[in-house]
Image (tube, rainbow, N blue to C red; front, side):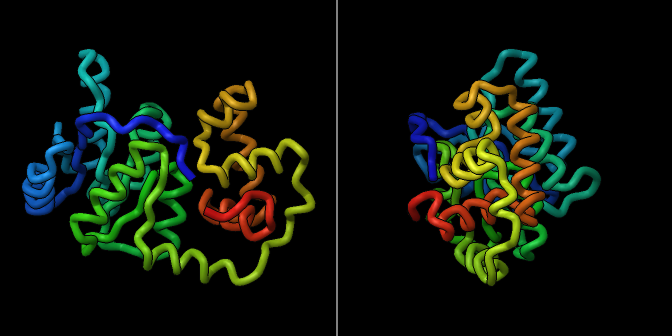
Length: 225
């Protein structure tokens, strides 16, 4: 479900985690991947957003991907993800956390996170998630993906209540389109696209774009894969 964006030669990464040892470990790992470059680190959501704003003001290149912890003092990872994806739409956020509860996953994906990893992920999975995010795709930890699927034990009511435009929005969500992509394709404002997405999730009694995509596939609105 990717948009087919071109893979850059060097993928710039910002690491956000309140534990210095985790940041050091990720720095050591990133340094071993020739196409990865760690361009900064932050210990909180506020610091991450301040860094991005400063770099944009100075005209410096922004990171392609933010590796985001969820549980941090002050602004947590979900709130930071929502702010970053809204104010810096070209920056992708991949959550890297110790917590795999479905509610946290829903919150991160609803905030437009481009991936969700657990901290026991092996280096290959981290690299896969980073590259998927850059090219417009999404990578979910396999355990997390299974949990999301199990929660969808029966089709939620409400599919027939969608308007023609909302069904179109649902299909675009299932194709992995961001709010900005939807706005461009339908020639509407990004704010209107965001409202449509919210209405679709509300009518279907869903709490994440991934749930909506799974529903659309199961109902035959889009092909799987």
